Length: 328
Ligand SMILES: NC(=O)c1ccc[n+]([C@@H]2O[C@H](COP(=O)([O-])OP(=O)(O)OC[C@H]3O[C@@H](n4cnc5c(N)ncnc54)[C@H](OP(=O)(O)O)[C@@H]3O)[C@@H](O)[C@H]2O)c1
Image (cartoon, rainbow, N blue to C red; front, side, top):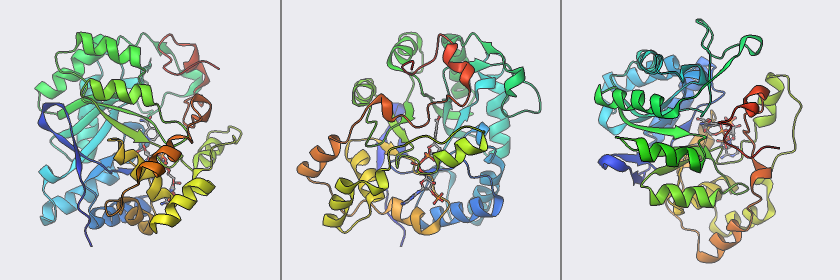
């Protein structure tokens, strides 16, 4: 059965479906194709990708099939991708959005995000600049934002926003912007609820999108691929409180975590390549968490210590003045 997915209102009258499919670490063609087909069949219309995920072309091929078959229309879809760190330069914003549009085989994006507040040099042929050739650049957020606004003017994206920016970085953009950022995408789950930042964004008419909404149980596998040691991470799926609330509602722990976010007006983009989980993650609109559930889930907040995707896999970034997270 195709689920009916509510949307969150965005600045400028656009709407973002409250659940989207995350696609980071999905680069296996068959696996991702199957995942996208399962997601679209289940009613997902919102897909989150990024230039650096190296999967835009796979997503583009699947979307093309769905669009040409008439099973979905472009207006029904909500496609987000992101300007990579090596694109954070006035001369490279248009170049990178055009590359993403070409790979996705789309005329326009629904949302284009600055992936991270720090820019690096770009070496042709590399998605990520190799660490031994990496140079940090002056991020010039205001100058980059003007280039992002030009992408809206040119019809290449309906909305623009930022990811991994902190409150003071967003405040500066809000003061200077002609087109205000419509969205902030940040790590957000029960152990890291970022309530002040969420409140600030909502007051400023920005949609908040939660990445790693399930606490990314695969993160240590990723660290292994980049040669880093495994870390102790919050194991939310096994948390006894979440399990007991899930049992009470006849739902899974993952569904409780996602429902908590949506009930707080936060969009969630869980990633899965497993069709049964893809269906499960969107099947959260037939139950509600009551006030007691919400209060006890709120109590699972740990704060900054619980940050999973801390970008320290690029150790040099932390020395940059635009490092957005607290220093360790
Ligand atoms: N802007 C940024 O800097 C940024 C950073 C990180 C992530 N993101 C975006 O946010 C998306 C989601 O975040 P994430 O991938 O870090 O983490 P996540 O969605 O919290 O977790 C993904 C992991 O959870 C597993 N999973 C999914 N549904 C499950 C369920 N119902 N029960 C048990 N396990 C389940 C998946 O496994 P299987 O796939 O094997 O099913 C995968 O290993 C990303 O894919 C990406 O699109 C953005």
